Structures are given as structure tokens and as C-alpha cells.
Length: 91
Image (tube, rainbow, N blue to C red; front, top):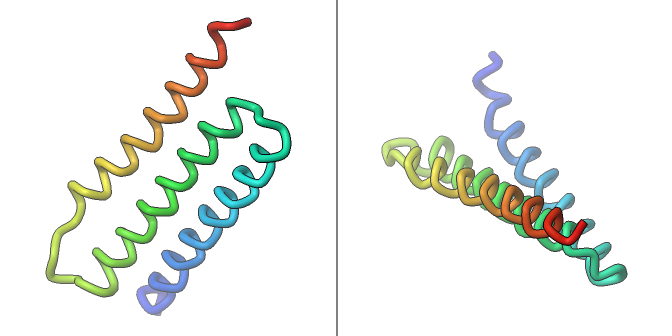
């Protein structure tokens, strides 16, 4: 029974990450804070990662997109890490 809820959870995670990226982007446009920029990029990539997860497990279940998902999530984390380092150098 839990298996039937999985696609809904995947889509909700995609929507949540997308909403976070949108709100962070709007805040960045108002304040021009560098950390908000890097956070926006990170959450955009996390939303993309969740979209690839939906494609991988729901739309194309016979295709294995695990490597692509791993690369996108790695890029998201590295982007945020770079943003932390870049903004921390000026302090």
C-alpha cells in the first residue's frame, strides 16, 4: 500500500524544492545577497534532481538514471559549498 504513495511523495519533494528555489530567487533579487544566489542555484538543482527521480522511478522505470541523479545532487551540494566558501572569504 505504501508503494502507491511513492510517486506523490516524489512530486511533493519536487514541488517543495522548486518553491524554495523560487522564494530564494525572489529574496536574492530584492537584497542581492550572494549566499541567497548560491542557495537559489542549489535548490534549483535539488528540484531538478527530484524531477529526474520522478522520471527515473515513475515515468521510465526500466531506465536507470541513478548516475544522473547522483551527479545532479553532487553539483547542488558543491554549488552551495562553493557559495559558503566564496562568501566566507570576505569576512
